[in-house]
Image (cartoon, rainbow, N blue to C red; front, side):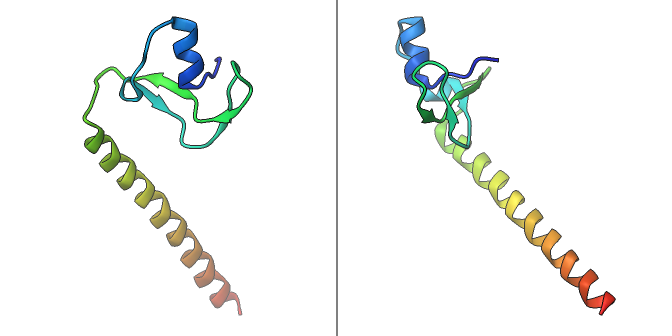
Length: 84
């Protein structure tokens, strides 16, 4: 699938687009339009949710990822302690 940043997407479609209408990638990826490293469009949002709701969802997803990493690290430490 082609990956374009919001600016290139607007140029291709010749209309102003809102960030709320599209889900942008978390990490920087190379835009196929301008060739720069930017957040690219992953998909169009079916429902335009309020930005505050979107921020809250991203916060909880990020928190979940952090807790998962911490959990994995503690499990590894426990296994290493048992082996010694």
